[in-house]
Image (tube, rainbow, N blue to C red; front, side):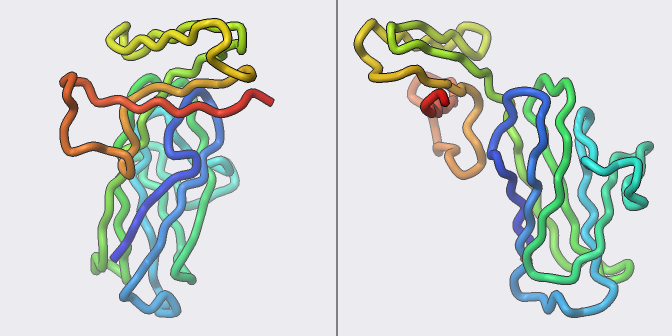
Length: 168
């Protein structure tokens, strides 16, 4: 099997993303293994100019595979919507495994310890932090849930996730 993941698990702005893969049940030492990843519009390899494995016309990024785990950096530029990545593991022309991954776009808000508010998803989600509710300033990310956090259903009819971290 092939498992595709990313770090971070969502995009908030133009930035570098580690696109990671794990292969199980297939001997990675096998010669001729390659991974073809379909990069959506707005994403490209970090080292695009020096890399021979990226096709601008199709958005397919092909990498040789020599280990069960691997990673490459991609750059997100002016990304406005959630993206779907497809990956296929090949031995020559034979497809051995496939996977897909959603990389959601999250809105980012700076919330002060003095209080604040965040309205996301075109105003459908609103969070208010009253004065004194936070012990320190935070960065709040809001958007569609990542693959790992996707609930089976949503009571409000709108699926979203909020992730907060301290502001350094």
